Each structure stands twice: as structure tokens, then as C-alpha cells.
Length: 422
Length: 157
Image 1: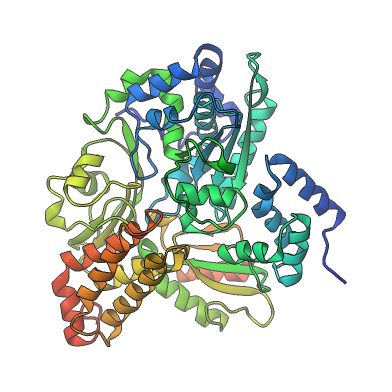
Image 2: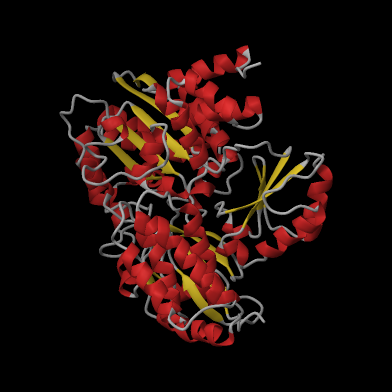
């Protein structure tokens, strides 16, 4: 398979403008500004079948088309580079090793909605990545690829790299916008959607790093070449971050629809040290865990993973071998969500801490017989009852762990302590 | 004497504000400037930033306390942040933290008496394929072993 997203990774000095341009970089950008109308660009990306890689999988071209063309307000394009989903590290690779690819993609999306200001909101902890992006943007300005009257067409575009300050919730698009407005990263009620009421109440599109980094290739090779890859509904390629108990962890680019089991066993080298697989989280820490026997028919595309009862999400694959205590794994993720709840909606703010506390006593002693159903009850009262999808993300993992490994949880309660590690 | 920016930082502040379509959007970068200048963001620093940004101190406090990267109390010269989330936990994050606690003689959330190190546990830093890992100030250190940590601590004066 030809690489779309990782094509420049591993090339010496891949982060510099000269290397990027020597490999054809910014040719798509020039073509877009000089020869395409925004509507033509949107149609091309719609035809490619590209869907948002931030986790939700919403069609990218359609998202752009919701921005009103006749609005008197300024329009904003925001790149969501706040990668924080447990088990996900693909965007960081692109940002650090191919920053120009991201800048070019960001500008193509900005042109599609006729924005003159684009922000790249990068996770605060990624200081190195921010430096790489700032260097790339500075090089772009110097080369006349960013700024005023681009290629003599009269089109102006500024790109601003903006650092977050440490908050998982800012990966949620409306929280990200609240943060970019200078406030706490609190999600906003939708509707109205950012396409009409986004940054400072202006029409705004928020796209993920991986989504944007795909655009230069699509413009270079054409929508048909992109949509020729993948499945009927999940087109193209996608990045997968693989971590945990796996022989060859790392970032992989796969054609959508690749068999999950084959990927883990062959491409990633399987579970090391002669251990057996116990469970896999396929799409980042907020997605339901899958048992080994559930993997046989799963392919890595949106529809197939959903049919198996989980979601493709960010493509963060966390592999757990037979030595892992599933109560402890569930507790670890519950603690994550308890730490990261923004505190705005009561069901989430209170519920995530209750779930963590109850899971803690299941693992460490003091649990009661009804505790598992109590956790499921709390999870059920969070999911769907909050402003943003964080509530669902926090509720799904404990629910899935308990339903799929219930015997192990019951054994912990009966023994009054961990039955796997001790 | 009340806190205020040096002339150079004041220039950086003005340049930062000028990049944004609205002044309030510069809040996060301005708070970074203040943290770099004052070491941490205590009540006086918050009040000063509030004045610069034409906002109520309570609102600035609300922003500062929301994000993990703003320090409201003084911290050590080397801020060691060990990732504790699942992929790192599967590769011994707890042992890394335990080793550091013993080595430094402090608990998480504490600073060594000489002001050299502060130890914190943090959530996923997007470095899961090279677990266990930690961040010290701006830099990531991956695939940690006890020997590697020993060498790192030795180099951090």
C-alpha cells in the first residue's frame, strides 16, 4: 500500500521546508489557491470520502459545507492538535516529523471555507512539537506560502500556533474553542454548531491533525485515488498507534478495512514473551475493550469495529496480555476520567469520582456485593446526560470491562483483594 | 514591591496580544509569559495578569486553576512528570514513580528541600509506544529504565 500520511516520515530532515518541497510539498497548496474555487475544493474532498480522524468520523467535506458563505463575520479554521486520548500518539509523530504537511493541510482547509486566520491548537505538553510547527510556519511566511496576497491572487491567510495548557477536555471541539477564547476549557451546548457559531461566535471549522495532513495528498493525486483505498464507507488510509503488550509498538498506516487480528499478529508481531492476549482497546482509552474471541471478524474500519460493539475512535490500540488485572485496568482509566472531567455537568463531575472510588475498593478491598451493578448504574446515568461526549467516553470503559470480565470482578469482591496480581 | 514584567517581557506581551483577533484569546500565552517571568502564578501574578488583560482577577484565577501546566505554587528547577495512564501502567509506570520517590526522598506533589526536583504523576502524554515515559520541564524521556533514570537525575543539577 502506498503511504499517504507517513510518506515523509523517516526521511532525513523531514521537518524542513527544503526537504518538504523537494518531495513535492506545497504544490497542492499552490494549485488550490491559483486554480480552484472553494466549492470545487469542497466537492473534491467530499468525493474522496475523507472522514474526520479525531474520533467521530464525520465527512470532512460536508463539515466544511455547513459554513455559511454569506456571513459578514470572519471565519476561522482551527486545527485540533490537542492529542490526549490514552493510547494515541499518531498526531505527535506528524507534528514533530512532518510539520509542513500539517501546515499545508490546515491552509487548504482554511481556503475551503475562505478563512483568513487559521489556528493550530497544540497540546501544551508538546513543547517540541510546538517549536517544530512554529519553525515551519516561520519558514512558510518567509517563502511567501503564508501571508498576504498569496501567489498574487489577493487571498490572505495567517497561521497562528497556539499552545494549550494541560486539559484533556480541550480535545473536544467546543472546549477547545472556549480555551482558544482565553477561558477555561468548558464545552458548549450544541446546537448552535461551530460551523455557524464557533470561535468568538463566528463561523468555525475544527479539524483533527490527521484529517488535515491527508489533504495535500488528496489534492495531488485526486479524490478517486483516495477513495479507491479502503472500504465502501470507510475510505482511504488511517493511522493506528499501538501500545501495551505488543512486540512492535508504534504508529502504523493501514488501508481502512485491514483485518485487526492479522494486524496485531503479523504487522505488530503479536503479544511478546509467549503470553496470551487478554483484551484490546481498539480506539483509544475511552472506547469499549474487546476480548480476543471478538477480534476474529473485526476489520479496522468505522463500521466493522462498531459492529463488534466498540468504536474505531482515534485508532489508539492498547494491547493487554494475560497477566493484566482487568479491575486495575478499569480503575486506571476511571482515574484518568475522574482527573480530566471539566466539572461543568453534575452527572459527569460527580459520577466519574464515584466510579473511581468504587473500582478502587473492588481492587483493594472493601467492596460490597452490589458494587458492580452500582458502577453500571452510575455509568448509565452519565452517558447521554452531559453537554459533551466526555460523559460517554468516561462511562463506556468501566461498563465494558465489567460486562466482559465480570467473573474477575466478582472474584475480587469475594476475596476482598486483587486475585490476579497477588 | 508589586510584581511586573521586565521591559523585554512586556514587549513579548504586546507582540503576543497583537497576533490574536481579540485580546482575551491571548490569555494562555500571556500566562505562560508570566509563569516564565515569575516562576509560578501566585495571587500577585494573577492580579498583575488580570490588570494587563483587562479582566477580573477571579476570572484569571479560574483559568489558571483549570489547567495542569500553570503552577500556582513554586516548583523545583526540574519538574519530573511521570505518565501513569494505562499504556504506561502496563509497562511499569508505578515502579518508575516508586523508584523516583525513593531516590528523591519525596512523595508525588512534593519538592526536594534543595529546590532541585518536583515530582508529579500526570495523565497520558501521547508517548504510549515508548512506555514507560516521563516529561521533565519541556522534554520527553522514553523507554525508561532505572539505570536511565539514574543517569538523567545525575545530569540535572
